Length: 183
Image 1 (cartoon, rainbow, N blue to C red):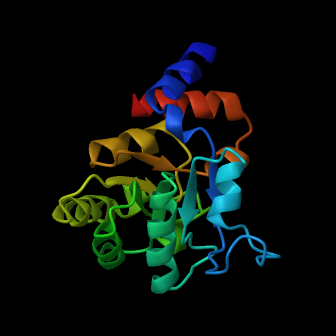
Image 2 (cartoon, rainbow, N blue to C red):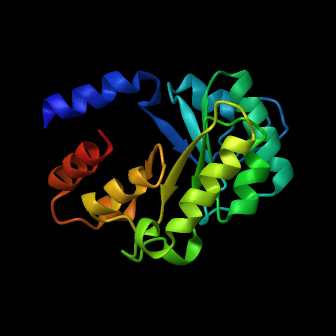
């Protein structure tokens, strides 16, 4: 397990820490009480941000501004989308990743790769249409290494997972299984 984790870390050394749902605010540092702004997060050695997760949707304007601001700080960006139309729209911003996650499958144990595989393949086409460096991730309902393997076979570059690990009875085994399925 340790060698597998080391290999994954070596594959993606710049993606060690991500901040979920930075609340964007146009205010300068100092007048942002109650907000986690990108500049403060960067100083905490966080390398990227998860933007627009289904549990914390934000406006299109906020997504656009956050991606620009984070890129200027040389931070990674993961823009979560709920459908192919959003994937196509936000891929044009050239975030590091677009993550397709249909809200109705999040936390259900019913994997996007099995329940809605066409969302992965169509989102992949939408991301490629932008002709930039954005890669596709997928999430929602992923709980087994078979779910991960299927997602990779469908063209996803990786996965976005939370409850599939948090609800697991054996985190180490499941994380190792997910990692092996990606490699």
